[in-house]
Length: 205
Image (tube, rainbow, N blue to C red; front, side, top):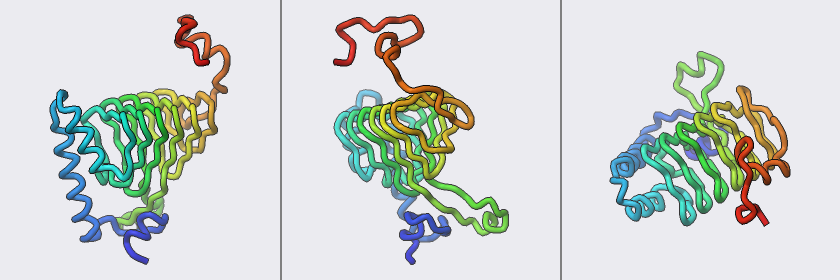
């Protein structure tokens, strides 16, 4: 089994492998350049992300600084995705995000983990598990999503939540550990925040 097969297949592997490190450093150099673009260089940022990511749709915006173990090489973004400051994607293996999803500041999505057994950790071993986030989700500020998680479509994850189990579509989920609070309902279509009512021209058809 090659280092790449282990890396993307959930097996334990050595992330300090020489060839892997060389590839990773090249990705991180490109990420360094992205994070030093000027706010007015929107076209340049868009072009760079298309080079850096495995896939990225039209109309995506990532506010620097952006952090990623492989600079986005294993990240698959749909279209119209927005990420606020300090998005961290631990993309040692694949991370998939659906169209129209939004990330608040300081969100962490991790695909990499380390063994519980200290003897294995002493050897520097690591394993990876892909993360899937559906369409039109809102991941609140400071949320953490751990390896192997699947989040459905139209999910709101509350600020500061730690997602350690899969979440179904169409729910609001909060807490540490993150739990489903309720389903998204008619009230949410009438009120966008507390007692603030959605005007008729803004309602979903």
